[in-house]
Image (spheres, rainbow, N blue to C red):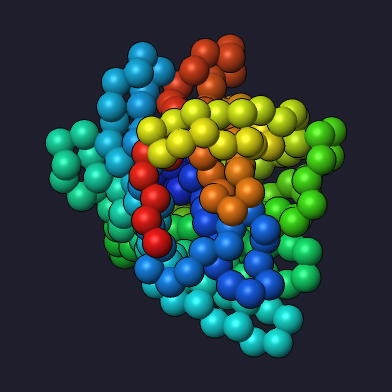
Length: 229
């Protein structure tokens, strides 16, 4: 469950909207903007909703940063977890701080343990084109409890702009770039690989996301259902 929450955060945050004067052209948002998504399992059953809200934007010289609040509601409408995330934009690059990807609820599960988190930030350039390769990213957790060490890693590798495609969701029709990546996780002796595709639209951000198992079978999908400004 802990690894699943981490995976949800990492996957969704790859397409999280950013705001600010100098930020990516894909995310020209304002404070108070909310994007709402619906998540489905591989059989199309509703698994819950996720909302992102811009709560704070700071412009300092050539760098802009934003605070975002993510709220995940399960299929029964009960709040599963919330978290705040920070982004920064400088020049042509949007950067996600990996330490901020850990939800407060997830951190609380490790209150009685020693934990060290490190990693490499996700980067997304302003200018995308088909065939473009994007930098890898990763997060590493080292956990210690009563002399027992538990390490887990999540690597985002083979990131590339796969194609352009028009996508229709309940929120409208959008022209998107499709970004492919492989999300490789390791916890104790368990290794998993989650290939995924992310649809990004200019002036919107994430429109759709799909994750697959190692055999290419669809596990989860997430689509934009509403956005307000």
